[in-house]
Image 1 (cartoon, rainbow, N blue to C red):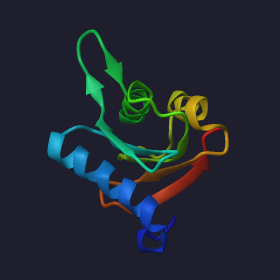
Image 2 (cartoon, helix red, strand yellow):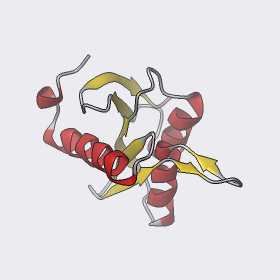
Image 3 (tube, helix red, strand yellow):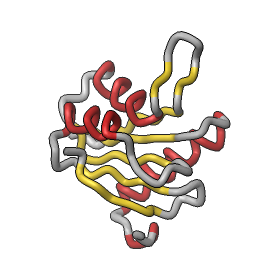
Image 4 (cartoon, rainbow, N blue to C red):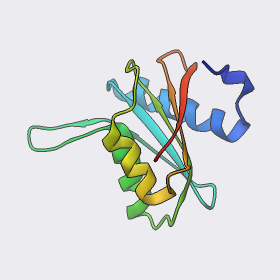
Length: 117
């Protein structure tokens, strides 16, 4: 477990953004990623009859569509205890295997930090 107030301010920001989108949109997950220039991309999970995307994969797709060349960090707010391999793979595809991914609970407390790869 990682104390949220012990996080780097930029990492705390993406956790806060992920938590906000989850609450605002009433979705099971919220995610935020930070690109190599410091821009952030925020998304909630997508659940349509024809399309299902996790919040993290949606945020990575938004970063790519906006021209991001790499990622510095990612955060997910969810009730899940682990990050799916597909989510970590999406972050690794853009940011590399060493990109940190933070998993926080709905309360915003980071429970797990892993590398994307």
